[in-house]
Image (spheres, rainbow, N blue to C red):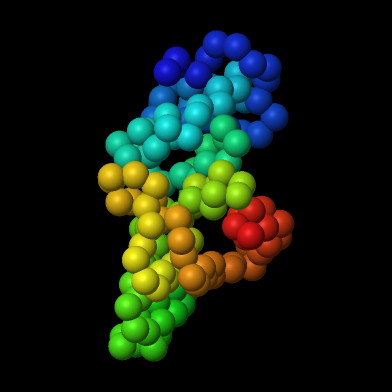
Length: 158
């Protein structure tokens, strides 16, 4: 794994930086030259498991995820609680916010607001932190990110 500065051309999206590398991050934020580095999924998972903030991954691009506001959090908790009550007598598990999901068809790694799995959960590896077989995925949409949520992340989950 390199430092992300070798090879590739100028980055077209400011979200392609890797947040762990603060000098690289500052360079990107200041509008300086930013060369694109596209880590493999294995590298993303290694970085993500050590990171203090969550990020999404798709085809070598890593995008930092914004924190949720009060209303968003209340809605997500209410949905998770409702699902949990509704599925109580079934062999299901409900995860709220912190369960990473891999969409095998697209290679997207993301953290939906609420995920439910019934039956035996399938995970990508022995870390048991990347779910592969959700039955229900819930994403709380916000007016400010509605277009991105509809055109971006949600479209990649199908």
